[in-house]
Length: 310
Image 1 (cartoon, helix red, strand yellow):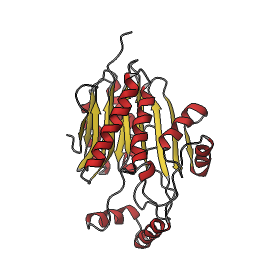
Image 2 (image 1 turned 120 degrees about the vertical axis):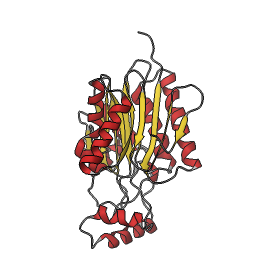
Image 3 (image 1 turned 45 degrees about the vertical axis):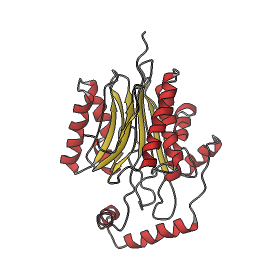
Image 4 (image 1 turned 60 degrees about the vertical axis):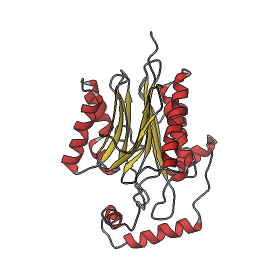
């Protein structure tokens, strides 16, 4: 079989923030390191893991070392990884203390009979696997999170008040996710994502990122998808799986993505962004949020990085 031309896409989250120079450089580095894995013949799932590790370890995005705090001052992270060759997947939810949650998800996929580990058992599993740890939140950071909790205490809908505070400029939006999709030389697809969750979210809340079919999905027969955006909405439509299903039925990446983003907006007023990659190497990046920092590279020229895609 002739070798395929590798492709990799990464994102640093959909939201309102303008991408800065440091974030752009980090996304470029993630593409370069991920593509280097593909170029040497590594599987797509490895390239996705490596690219996401670059973003997690940077502290620049809401994932890994840069994860936001929850209302009780804790830092709980989610991640997932899926191999389109055999539909294997691994995920963690509410894992604490790990610098690279995506690698914890990889260990779940490779070393257990499960798909998803959550909470304290996931944290113990990460320690067993000797994944590099990060320092716990400082007392000052916890105090700030608790102050945020007091502001939200009178609200029946935490997210609603959070959005009002963001629009009023009193709180910076922090609900982004990082992710990647890749196609390797053997024609295999993979998808992954990692997040620190929504800023000031209620403890126990789990978004779309660790839920296979919602935040990520990869199938060599259809395509690979990594989502970012309002997790509650993405879960309710199982967005990643629907996009892949539409591609398997014959839709090109951009049409499949645009159809499902419109459905998300029309049915439940949801906003999101996505990376979509087809088995033939065609891809799409789109979002319904004001911005989405992302990029792609096929090995030619320089990686393409931007914070707006249409």
